[in-house]
Image 1: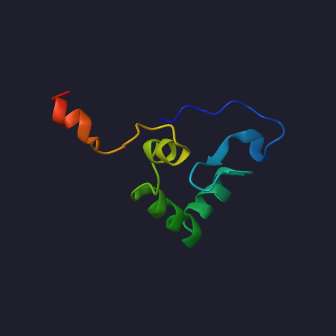
Image 2: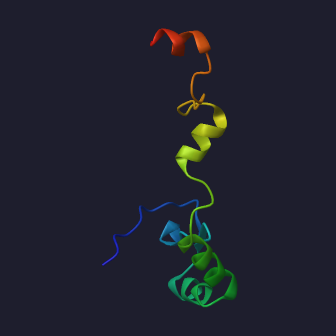
Length: 83
């Protein structure tokens, strides 16, 4: 069974009825169940189950934090000396 969420007086329904996919709180279980049957919710669930558009590695490479790929050395002197 699902572990209950901590009580939060600032959220609707004391923060107990939360939809992770849509990032929404609901006032009651009935309202949340009704939300689960909507087209918008089903579309978000399907979208989240698909491939992730980006990964942490993509973000690091874009920020220049990943491993650099400078290609092979093109210095003729190093190749001729056998280094």
